[in-house]
Image (cartoon, rainbow, N blue to C red; front, side, top):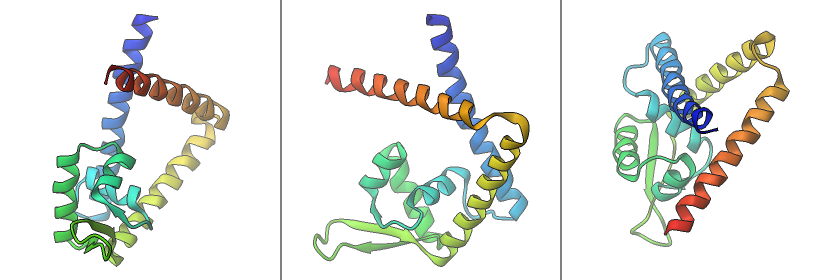
Length: 150
């Protein structure tokens, strides 16, 4: 079990890096140079919501300092609009600008093309569902370990 567990951990990490490569390749194909793959994922996680940086950190499982830096860059490059909360002036919310919405639509097209290609014989929908169930179980297990030790 230990050997398979370690293989799984390494595979999860490799898959995440490879997926970031897929996004980078799509950005290159589109000729988009003012945003990176991680920032693109952040935009996808925001989608049509309006979030605080803290909510984005929780939702996307990013490190807080990286989110703050990336949000700053996304605002500077016109992908995000950052506004102070009317209820608590210390808190800021971010939402996608028109430029951000256009990019996320293109990334959604990428996801759809990927899903169509996968469905054309790479994996069965049931296999992905089973994989997702296992990964969710692993995430719950790790969360219990982290929360129990605190």
